[in-house]
Image (cartoon, rainbow, N blue to C red; front, side, top):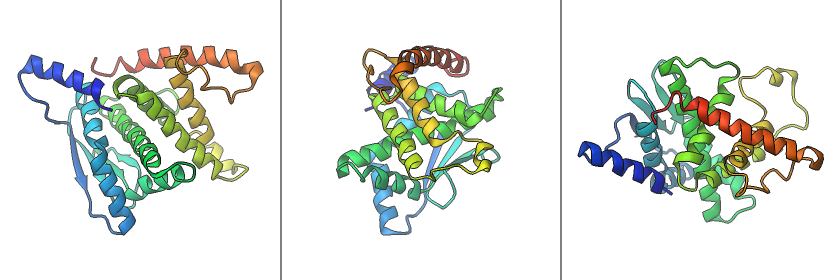
Length: 249
């Protein structure tokens, strides 16, 4: 899962003469307080997702100071700009795992949960990137960093497009778990609706490689499908170009 990153790491090492060592992210695992949290903590540690996340940040994020990643606790997932810290509860990953277990065997459900975690880590790090670099966002910042997380997975994580589809599936699960109708207050929210986030993620994956993912948007009505496919191709190209003004390339 880490081959693209390791190629980049090897290139950096060849130039600098130094082996890879993460510098920008400081990770802390808080104690797990329940057997289920212990299981999730072990899953995170064994998956390698945190190391892969650290590599993406070190290689592509122009951050001026150390970014803290804290697993555990009850708050989050969130980014605190005052502390330059990301918080991800074990319960968040546990809930993702439970969703995927509804229709997948254990191993595939664990992959789905870890892919969802990677998207979430990159999303919260996106907030840090925006804050640290004073990047102007015209629109919802949550949508912008959703797009960034998906873009980074597609381009810099091995099998990242498939992982992004898993992350999109989590949005679909959460949408199905919600109410049939939205409260008016939900229309004034920093996040788009979960079903919008689901299709937005699939749109970027499709747009990144229409030949490989030619059936990915088949849920779209047939009379609109070709138009939406063209839109997704253009959208991916725009987001890829625009975000790379702020990434190390």
